[in-house]
Image 1 (cartoon, rainbow, N blue to C red):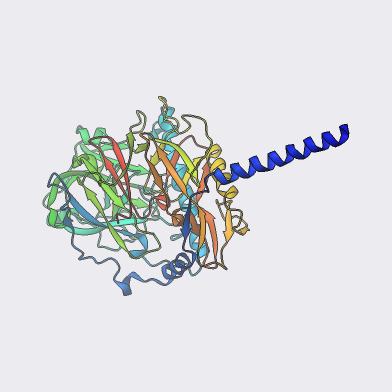
Image 2 (image 1 turned 90 degrees about the horizontal axis):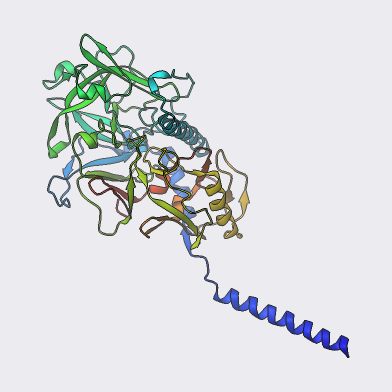
Length: 492
């Protein structure tokens, strides 16, 4: 009798446990998802390999620049913004090799950015260092090795006028750099570029900067010759530009010109600069273009780099009304970078478990998260990356896995699919707002046959970086006057 009673109690216990678990399962919210258009992504990988800017006229030299009519101040203007594919045809015939070369270049840039912070935190000046010589193939990396590439990416270009009368040049845009520069005649050592090299003698507003000037004192690497200021910008892979530091007129098409912009006139330039004449620095330091023109804000929208489409770089246009807004944070150690108040991550609507304050920038200059248009793949510290990846894998049990590729350790074989449902990935910012990423911004093709990888990577540095793959298709606005960053999806 006692045995029968015990057996009944045990049966009731299991029945209650089953019903309780079933109730929890029904009441638990289903993971939020996004749809990835596999077929469209694969078509784009094939398109970029065959696209020829010369035939398609993807980036017209005569394309007009224009005022931004949405600017509340009336002084806003826009510059056409194009991906590298619109300017130069890739020599790669296989998309997987193109991806590998892009990732190699991306790793070089990330190393340079993190080294920049490390040196600043430890009080080491660049003038105390010697560049390390490395060999890279001309198209081996996806961005020009200019103040972007090893330290900057040349994936996004615009056309800017330099001198008076103005001559138009393709210029790389880089939020991770401050010094603007252009190749100049006479050339001691200049790389090949699309446009004729700038000739200072043909400009009436070219003016050398003196050694005693404030502009010269703001350079991290400078020298003096005959009372005139010389500059050098060097990068972690041995690339560099050296020449005279000058002031010159910079123009933006119909929006007029700006006189007296300090920039480098490079007579000796080494590196993989991929057809651009020079670089426009959009960083937060005093020598950047944004600082020199006293821009109250600027924004860009990065089209897919495998696309021939275009967008704009806007100045003084403010934040779009529908922006996901986050604090813009300044570092006391490195004034170039734009830090953002990231507080957390989520996958499928469920928070990724991380210690409180994990992404904060501390007083010594360590930690923090920057938004960078030159870095391709978002980097998080290993603890955050592992937690993010594991959460994605857990909520993606039906995706067929395959081996890793380059720095990606989580990849899937989607060759038999036309579209798939994947867990939503979101960034959460201090202030309470969140940015939901499109599926194509975090599950990207690495070949033309259907291999897709989770497009995040770990870093051993304390610095985290939100890269341009995660920014594609989103207008990113920097409200410099009010220290805010805005993200507006579908605003290209």
